[in-house]
Length: 300
Image: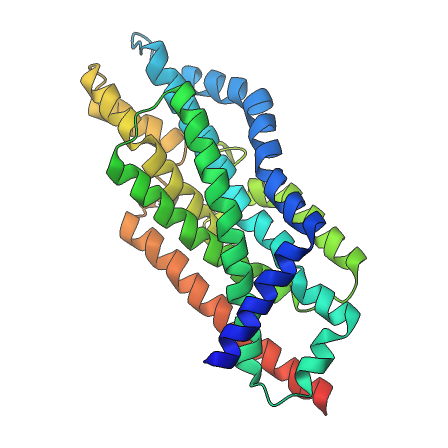
C-alpha cells in the first residue's frame, strides 16, 4: 500500500509541477463556460420557449433558471471527461521520457502502477472539476438559483462519478499513445465530439429515433441526464407552483433529456447510476488488464 501511495503522490506532484498542463486544464472549463453562455444560452432559450404549449406562460426567472440549469449540466457533463484527458497525459509523458521503463524494471506490481496513474489523475481532475462546479454555481446564482441543499449534494456526487468515468475512459485510450502529437489529436477529437455523443450540446430527444437508440448505449448519456435532472429539479418545482400541469412539465423534461428512454422505456435514476458505476468498474478493470498485459509484453 505504501508503494501505491508513493506512486500516486508522485503523479500528483508531477502534474502540478507542470504549470502549463495544470493551467491549461484549469482554464479550459472557464473558457467553455464563457462560450456556452455566449453562444448556447440563446439557442437553449429559444428551444425551451418553442416547446412550451400555447397558452402557458412562465416567469422570466424560471425561464432563465431553466436555461442556466441546461448550460450548467452541459458544461459539467463535458468537462468531467475532457479535462480527464488533459490531466491523464502524465501516462503518455512517462512513456516519452522513459520513466515508464524505469518503473517496469522495478518489483512494483503492475496493477499498483496502473492504479497509481488512475487515482493520481482522478484526484487532479476532481480538483479542477470541483473548481468548475463552483464557478457554475456562481453563474447559476446570477442566472436563476432554484437549487436546494440536496440538489447540490447530488450534483457533486454526479460530478465525482462522471470524473471517475472520464479518467477510466481516458486511461484506456492514453495507454496506447506514445507521442505528444497523438495525445493532442485524441484530446482534440474528444473535446469536439464528446459533447454531441453525450447529449450535452444538443438534447438527444432532438435527434432521429435511430441515433437516439445508438446513443443510449453510451454511459456518458446517463451521466448528462443525471446532472441535468438534479440541476433542474428546483426549477420544475417552481413550475408546478406557478400552475404548470404535471403532464406539461413531463413533456419539458422529455425535451431536454431529464427523462431519457431506452427503446421506448423510461430509464430510472437508479438504473442511470447503475450504468455509470458499472461502466466505471468495467473500464477500470479493462484498463488494469491492458496495462498488465502490455507491461508483461514489454518486459519480455
